[in-house]
Image 1 (cartoon, rainbow, N blue to C red):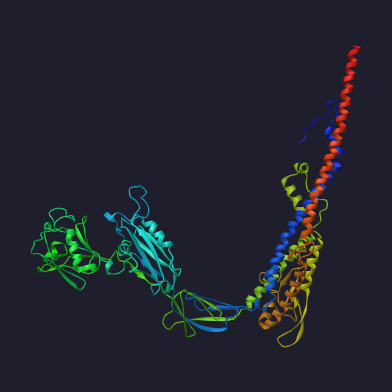
Image 2 (cartoon, one colour; image 1 turned 135 degrees about the vertical axis):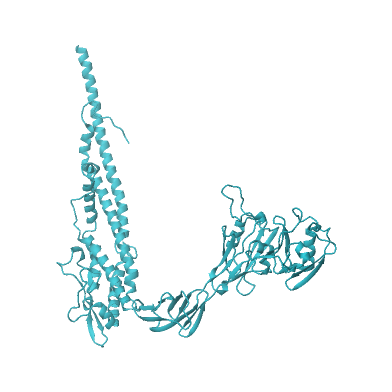
Length: 640
């Protein structure tokens, strides 16, 4: 920005003088800028209006042209707590009987209670005080690397596998299970409840095919038990009474501390099999366990719990109900001096499972099965909710939906009215020629409300008497005023228009200026102007006509909508000045807007040039006066 210091010699207010001399040029710059701004505002108005027209054209208006828009069905069910039912236009009219024998459900497994070493709480994260760490697989008794396999459905083909290491945290393992996917895309969701200490698994899909089970052959039994997912007898824990040793018994201690002698034999049963083991009192508890396992094989899973001083059996029925068995806490003496089992059964580690189920319904005597609760049958969509009692059923009724046709026509008329009313408001607004954009100086002299009111008047006048808008309104009104030669249900040809169905505009004096082209359906309860009105002589209310002669109503509105669709389509075709699907000359407006940029620059350059010229002239004058003043001072000094 150039800084000028003027009027030093002449004492003149050069800035004000030049401002007045160039005021005409400044007004021209403002005029061109205001014209560009008005054009920009008109572009925005047209964009918003055109979007609404195109939406009306592509949806409501387009739909009214085809038979499918009028083929509406109404489907109801006598008890919607049993099922929800909807129908398409292809659904057959009539009454049908429906019963529900089962609803689809997902498979669900409740795991056994997890046990951590030392009986510490099983947790997914570290405790808040940091004293207890998140549980690892090693804490649950897993050693090395092990694998969990889950199979889906009836066969063994659809499986998913998860590999686990003893160093993994329980949280990591659950995340791994949750993200795993089977061969056929099946999954399970898994959650751990710290309060209950159990895992909860469910299939992500409903139906029998999504049922899952732990794959015993593909999984490591130790991992399955550690996660509480074993569901057979091997998940049952049996604990004996505390052993009677002089002091705490360790696994490496000799069994003679329990009173065992060389003459003793341990006779025990695992399931239906009986075994007899010669005892060596010099052997340790570990040796005893190894000998029992060797004798019984994999059918026996036995260990010694040093903390609780008792033997633990983890795989089903086990008993040693004799005097020797009592030395190990397997048995105890009864009142009649016989020996009975002292083993306590704990089922808390055993998983409980409920398989997924398919939904089954019977419609008109035919049974249908689905892995979800949704059925699509002959145009009906049935969603089963609950079962019906034996021999009970609900009724499904399908019929033509006359109210649906009425609502469609009513919706079409409302959209048309909204458009034509907005167009009328824009077109008939005062031009407000005397209102131009306010300058900064003018705004300083006005209140905020006065400025807002001033700008509102400019905004409202932007589309006033717009020729293109006027043509669009005229085309739309012509279509709505059209009448067509149609045949009624009795075979008679007649002229049919909107007024045939008591759909009319209000009188000139009854309607607001912006609503004189809007149509009102007589008897429409949502319309304050026509609610309660009855049919005029020789006509029917629209609702009655839809019931009495639906074909006549359909053929009329198809003809009207096709005509209006064609007229609007022709006006929205692409031209040299407008794009496709555009009512206004958007290309020309953009070109004119860009031209204004050139005009504004030219006007601003002209203003700057004239200001520079005036400043140079005044600068020369200032220089001459400075020289004159200097000469006068010198002369005055010589004269004395």
